[in-house]
Amino acid sequence: MERVLVGGITGSGKTTMATRIGARLGLPRHELDALHHGPNWQPRQEFRADVERIAEAPRWVTEDQYRTLLGDLLTSRADTYVWLDLPRRTVMFRVLRRSVYRTLTARRLWNGNRETFRNWFDATHPARWAWTQHAARRERIQGTLRDNPHLTVVHLTSARAARAWSRSLEADGARAFEA
Image (cartoon, rainbow, N blue to C red; front, side, top):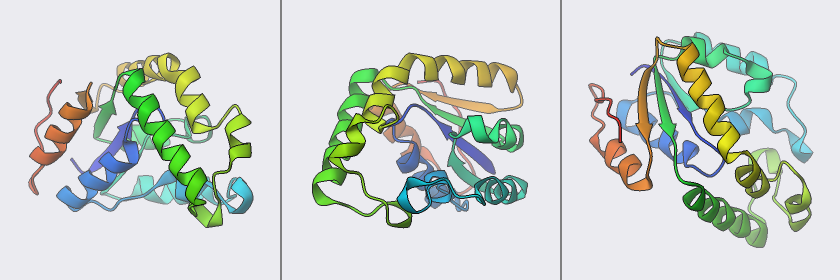
């Protein structure tokens, strides 16, 4: 595991899992949201160039997102795909809890952005996105995995399985398993 993509719908735990994988395997960790969102939630013009540099590196871990902007840039270079295929109820609990916390505390996110109650009415708000796109995202990931047979796939279908797998990682690599 040298170039790892972590996929799943918003709220599935991609960022947390990528952080754990990076720490346990000593892989450089890159957060795509931080690279994408500029001030006032505007996309950064340097986003694609930044991700191209990451993709060219020999070792990294990041989330599988922004496919409409990046296409197969990361997928074609990855060797491992960790799929957090969690039930909608788990995802919705997590994304709602996170968004409420961020909104109530006015927590600063990437480049000074904050989640506000006004954001909740936007169709791309994480809670709305997770609800409406859960099944479609699952189908897109299945297609991505079919189209990229070079990937070693770790398919995790519960939070418990995800925690157990991440704890099993060792410095010399991890075993893939279907949970």
